[in-house]
Amino acid sequence: MVVVGAVFVVLPGAVVDHDLAGAGVAAQERLKAVNDVRTMLLQVVGGLVVLFGAYATWRQLRVSQDALRATQEGYVTDRFSRAVDQLGSDKPDVRIGGLHALWRIAEQSARDREAIISIQAAYLRTHLPWPPAGPGAPAADVPINDIAPLETRAADSQVALTALGVLCEKREQSWVNLSATDLRRADCDGLWFPDVNLDRACMEAAGLYHANLSQASLVSVNLRHADLTTAVLRRARCVLADLRGAKLVEADLRDADFTETDLREANLRKADAHGALFHRADLRMADLRGTDLSTADLAGARLTGALASEHTRWPAGFDPAAAGVVDTDDPGPEPPPLLQPPGMTWQAPPLRSAP
Image 1: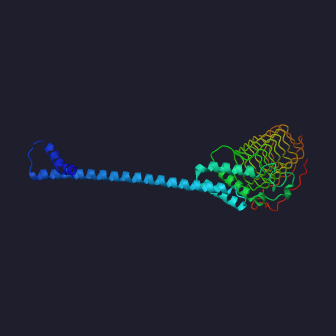
Image 2 (image 1 turned 45 degrees about the horizontal axis):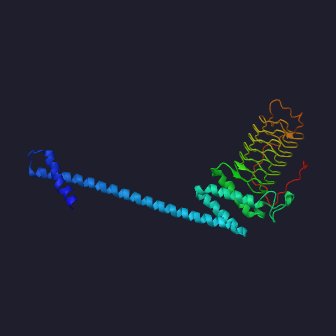
Image 3 (image 1 turned 90 degrees about the horizontal axis):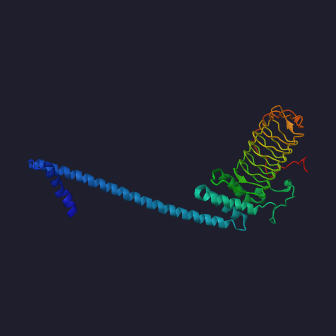
């Protein structure tokens, strides 16, 4: 009260007397000047009160936000722990629920996305090893037409694979390990697997329509009869791989490395193979009609019986006739892929080039 009295009673008069410097003025004018000073002081104090209130509100909001963030993180951590616990269940439906829970957490929490991607990749490596090791897994020598699609024989692994292929589109880490996994008849249509290590994996008859495998490592991978129509394999390392009978229609193969890869009977119609390496690759009986090989490296490649048309583009100075290429009519435009062949009924045709 003393301070308020000094500020609003004594201080205004002192300020007016100081400004007048002893000059004589009427009492009414002096009182008006004192009241003007008091009004100014009230405005200053009111402004300070408003500023202090705003600061206090901001601090309270920060504290509330921090508390809410801590609560949310605790909730996410609890959901994460429960989802991981579900992966160890003996019941497939419980494991599927845990995988879906992790998928949803990864979409909502960017800081947990990398960990969940690693968990899903580890889940696939341990549940689907190649060569098969589990009691219920089909043996390695079982014909592909006798093997059920992955979503039928291991629905939980198909969920993990799908979630991985969706989350990899927005991942930050540079490498995901899916090497030596059994992905026969897996459904990977439209999924993203850039920079993924699939070395020595078995992906026979897998559906990879419009999948993104750019810069993936596919060393010694088995992709026999796989559907890679319009897939992106740009700068992929597909060395010593088996792609017999694979479908690579209109695929992006730019700068990919197919050194010593078996591409017998593969369908590469209208594929873009700019800068691709086919060193000692086996392209016998492959369909190369409309394929752009104008800047590809075909050193040592075997092309006996391969099909070509007037729209096939060869490297400068390359003689397709001397290499045993068969010139035939162009098939024309590719039909739109309105309906993909159902994985439950599609049968892989026998390979004429089987060793």
